[in-house]
Length: 323
Image (tube, rainbow, N blue to C red; front, side, top):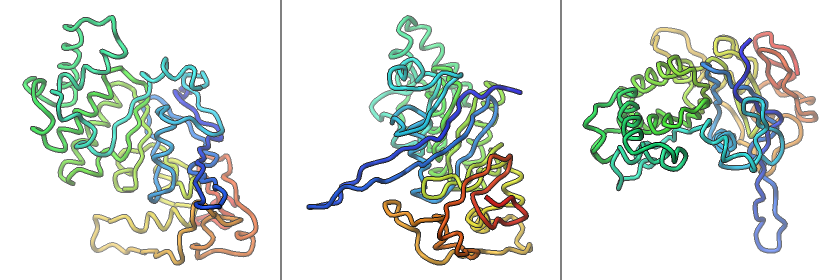
């Protein structure tokens, strides 16, 4: 079996939040005990509501922020601040907003060459220019775009430029943080198809962060569903989408639009309030909103079993193994 490019074990990220005047600070657990592995040519999708910890996870994987606890490894070597500089080339990110992620005062050629100037000082000017032009062609842009400014491009073209910039250092892992959510629906499919093509050609490992399950269904191989910083379900794309085990995952999928207007649709509307991430209740964090909640759920916190398809739930849906 292919070895993973990157692994995470019990990964956590905490923040101290001020309690205000004469009040003690509190701890916000943005990510609490996450395990995963990224493989060449495969896509791991992380989905969940806003505030569940997806973007915090992206910052840890790209070594923008240090984990509070747990371990990240790249090609078998543990990632710690002392060796971040030597590994950052291997992990790159494509941000959500193609309008804010490009410097409006730089030409496209300069934007693409900048990572090479910083990290590949031995490369000549001619070599940098050639690589930048080759990368433009790889993402479907024309040679004359090299000398233009970002404001001269559409959102989809800007995201292609952002993808090209992320590939300039020949990374092994690409973190895609909502890469198509800011684009028109007519453009999303072309950018997604480009990402799929690049992955097949370059054997990249993708960490795909999204709240749009219809997009995830198109690109993912494996899926992790997060809720308040924890993974509540994991499994292959087909397993999670066809028979979700966790009630929260089932509710998310019920909200996904379907192309068949005549098909039966069960829309699950969650009741109750989302708990504060600063004051997560004892037991299962989803218990205040779950329609299957029982006393055990309020008293104990379920763990995520180490199975190919599993959910952190005592009373799972669709015949899943209880936690």
